[in-house]
Image (cartoon, rainbow, N blue to C red; front, side):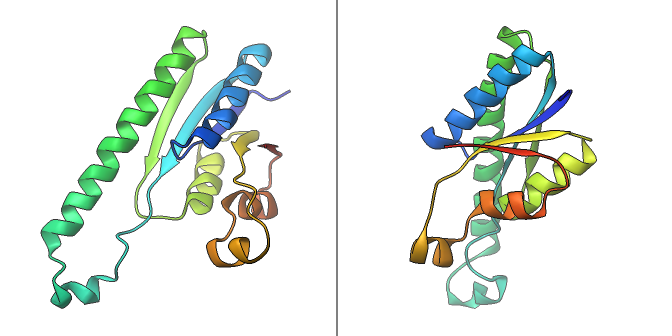
Length: 147
């Protein structure tokens, strides 16, 4: 039924519930998985470099994001391998998580996305957005949300 599952994570404890559920489902179904994480662009517009932000700061931010992502993905891939699951990893820098998830699902020809939701509601959702809601709203493939 589901032969290739995309499992997004941001490294949080909540996201780990989605990872655990996705890996368990993949094990039960004999599915392959792609594990993805993304990092947002540098928090300030580059035009503000004259305000004390240097290109070295932006480069250091990007390098730190990549290192953290690689460590996170390696840990989850090792868990998948121990479970006998064929897993690949993807890190997408400088983009919103929802965009990265949707594009990766398409590129990797996944047929299910399993992810956790932070469950933001009301004003918090309005101000912070909901990556899960954006994925559910725009995904052409099924999305399983783990609370």
